[in-house]
Every structure is written in C-alpha cells, then in structure tokens.
Image 1 (cartoon, protein in one colour):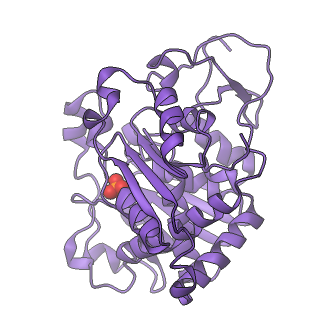
Image 2 (tube, protein in one colour; image 1 turned 90 degrees about the horizontal axis):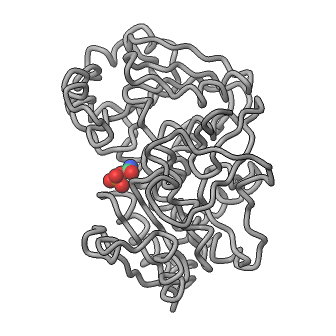
Length: 359
Ligand code: CP
C-alpha cells in the first residue's frame, strides 16, 4: 500500500513541514488556484468521539478544494455499535473514500487505521495520545505570530496528563532549536513520565510548577488547556481539580506585551471571556489557521499517493503487553503487539507509545 499518513506529528520531517507552511501560505493568498484541486475526490470523516473544530474544519477544507465529504460523527450511528473493529472499518472505508480523517477514544486507534487503509489516513485525535492536525494548526499559528518556531519559551497550563494536543505539540517543538518548556499543572495532571523523559533526553530546558502567575512573565506563548472531564475514571477527582486555573485580565497584566495565548478549544472556564478582546489572545485565529493548514495537508497527502508509507514499529523479538489500559490493543481483537524503542532504550508499544509490562 503506497501512501503517506499523518498518525504522529513526527511523520513529517522538518523540511516537509516547511513545504506544508509554504503550500498553506499559497492557498491562503490564492484560494481560487486551489478551488478545483480535489474535484471528484472524497474525504471520509470517521468521528467516534465528539468534535466541532476538527471534523468541520477537515470537511470545510475538502469542500473548499472542490471535493466531497462522507462519514459519521457518532460511532452509535455506525457499525462500530454492532462490534465492527477499526481495522475492518478502514478496509471498508478505503473502498469509498480517497482520504480518511479518524478520531477515536482509544489510544493507538489512528495507527491501526493507517495500517488497514489503502488511502491516506489523518489522525484527528486518538484518546489522550496525540492530535497531530491540532499541532499543525498550533505550529502554523506560532510561525505566523513570531516568524519562527525556534528560540521560544512555551508554558503549557492545565491538563497535561490527558491533553493530547499538549503531547503532540511538545513532540513537535522538541525538534526546534532552543525551545524551553514550563509545565503548569496540579500534581494529579502532570505530564506523563514518558514525555518528560523525552524532553530531558532532548536536552531541552524544562520546569514544572503549579503556579500560573509565577510562570507568566517569562513566557512567549501560554498554551491553556481544558481539564478533560471525559478522561477521568473518578469524577470526584475532576470535580476537585476543575477551575484550578483561570486566566483573566488581572493575570494578563503580568504577561509580556508580545506573549500570545493559545488554546485548542473548546474552553470551559479556564480563560475568562473578559480577555477575549486582548490582542494577545490567538485561539480564534488558531481556528482559521487550522482550516488553511488542513487544506494544505489534504492536498499534500493526496499528492503523495505513491510514496512508501512510514514504518512505525521495529522488528524486536519481545513479548509483553502494553501497560496502558486505554490502548486499542486491549479493546479490539486481532491486533498483534508491535514494539519500538524509546530514545533511552525502553521497550514501548508502537500503537500508543506506553511502556510494555515486565520490560
Ligand atoms: N481542538 C479540537 O480538537 O476541537 P474539537 O474537539 O472541537 O475538534
């Protein structure tokens, strides 16, 4: 199966990302040139989890490229409700569509989708694992604001444990020079250990704090996140943590004049609406960047139809289960374990990047 997918943000090299920004800029400046680029092509959006932006911006992007859209926005309305696996669904959907965007609650579902589809697959979010098209959106927004993606200090605030947009953006920013990180979260929502190790292994500066006010004055970017109620197994913990961080006018006074505030949205109560007219607030601009970059991504993946796909696992003679209960390997039949090594040599599940038991 020759085709490229976007399962992880690292599927695109830095040079390929540069080419994507250039294409996105051209699409933004000359939309009429691209209005028929996907004539007679179909995008399928398979959304097993709720979404406003990601689904509709992919659909809107495809329509603006002259293509059509099919799909479902609720797994209950699909044959998943009768027990159909992601693997089988993808084999079926690649008979109907030329490109597929999938969002799923299980971590690693996007890799299973890519491995079983004959057409390009876009990961539109797999559980708490990753969300690479939001990362493309975020990188494109940062580049528009600062003219660069290096030499920046970025603070992530809120739900760093379950926030897949945080996980993907950290992975992306680690590839640029002199990016430092401030992780602002309560103990229960700190960044997963594996990701923290990746930052340390990459040699990037990294600070953890629970105090937003202390971190604010030093930041170029504040990336706020919602505390993700739907990912908690114990809702009393969510109730205790909800409302931990609220960015308001008073706190914004502590920030640099040129700092920007980003948020993948939706917001709940973590950013007061009284700051929406502050020019440093960029989250609605992010949404517009998201539509433009997704137009570029769809075009790019369709044009790469004859490329060798990316191999996401290594031939490692190992045994053992993934330790992540939310990994798709524990929920869907017929999936063989696949392994890879982390930068420090630990054995990881290739689907969800979590550690393997007894390793
Ligand atoms: N940013 C984001 O993923 O939003 P949706 O959940 O609305 O798609």
